[in-house]
Length: 365
Image (spheres, rainbow, N blue to C red):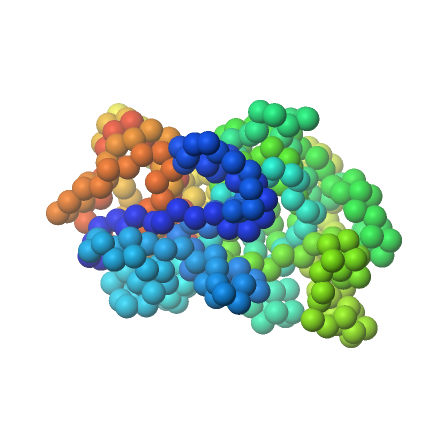
């Protein structure tokens, strides 16, 4: 049971959109609705402030080899050493140390940043910040303008400049402090802790990140409460001061030119290995962060998957084929989501297929 791949149950969660997720999964007719513009894949992380009737909202379900369906974190809790392995647990405990999502931007996401690990520890007592990355796997064909992202401050932006517009709740001015980048399918970007960003209208991406849901927007508490009719549980002066401190202190005011910004955050794939069977490239790796990584395995024939000594989460990006392993096999096709316990013997991918393999902190190359 622990020495073979597990098929993950597909989901959609929170937000409006999701049409491109449906298209990718072969669900017709694809629709934009309130089922969710995100999908959380192989997740053992709950959303921040989950609904009262859905305490595990954000956590992925899995179909085990015996046919049983349960939350992935429940399956792991039954035998963590056999599923995760000692090396993984020494670094990440019984968590996965990463979170993988689809994000489908029907509308532009709000300008935001996420804390570095030190700031997250200081302000939320969280062991994780939220470094993250985007891999563009699709763009909408009916948007008013080409797909884009906002990423990184422009040269000369200081906290004083940012805070002036923040206090005025001038979101357009705040967005204009950031670089706007038109994106294409196949491009990948790393977003460091504290770096301002927004996924632009028309982008469909795989996001790989630290396993945290701490997000800081770009507007004061009062402005958000008024615009979105949100009632914060505590609107006292002390609560608003803490909100301001957490948000304004999380952004890293280290702007640069457009060219330097691309050098910092746009990733270049590196070939990890290759052969007659195809190749495996590092999409996001140690050049940017040691907290997580992911590779793209392109197979035309049969390829042995690397034994990293850690669990992995896979997404079939394109094509179809099968996974074979000691004692069995599993058919795979585009959009299949798979959890790999750490110790699968003789694991191979066969066919004409492309797979994204997501790796937790601790994996080295």
